[in-house]
Image 1 (cartoon, one colour):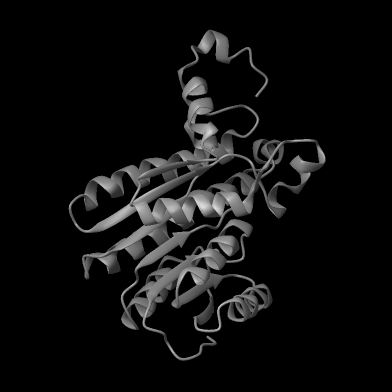
Image 2 (cartoon, rainbow, N blue to C red):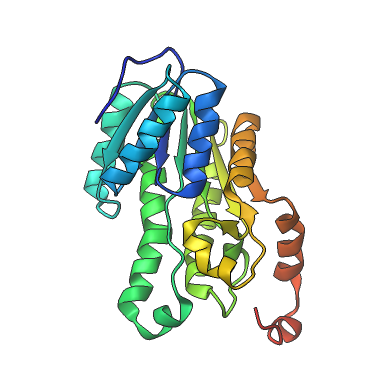
Amino acid sequence: MNATTRPSGRKIVIIGATSAIAEQCARLWAAEAPAELVLVGRDESRLATIGDDLQVRAPGARISRLTVDFQDPATIDALIHDIAAEGAIDIALVAHGMLPDQHACQHDLAANRQALLVNAVSPVLFAEALASVMLQRGHGTVAIIGSVAGDRGRKSNYVYGAAKGLVERYAQGLQHRLAGSGINVLLVKPGPTDTPMTAHLKQQGARLASSAQVAQDIVNAVAKGRKVLYTPGKWALIMLVIRNLPAFVFNRLDI
């Protein structure tokens, strides 16, 4: 961990802080007011680069960097409790994931398993640990990044979609459990976004949202206490149509 003197501001924990969307969110939160930002990731050198950049952008912020095994429940639980022991968490963003190759997942069960662990099980473990420590204070927001892919299984990405569908059902249940507790749970459902994870889609000519705009939408939704965010907003209508297509129509689509 590397840190400077703690300011009197919010404590924001970002899980998967090296993701493009998470980095943009961190910049926005750091620019709003002096804050304590706890960056959690797997790549120590990448975390250091992001942390140093944030410190330059926001000299009054306290920037901490932590690396962790993202799939070990005991390690995750200990990490979150250690962070909370040093001060109440005001905002937590669970942002990590990967975009697996659907064809590989169909033919390699190990790849299938890894995609489900990274995109579903690991985010849920972090969110559950965060909710537990926030309940002790009766305060905070947990924002979890899901995907529009979780709205309906499609042949082009159903392993990824299944993982994000699990995240959605989990978030709904956590919202129900925490109703009236003072803790808000925000499920973020981005459409295809311009990040290193989707570079191959961009090369194929896909129209992608900017990570900066998605991050701004997330920061705004957290501030407003929203429960669900489609970003960009057009995806709420697009997925409403896709979810409600009858099977005899849906099964003819190459999506």
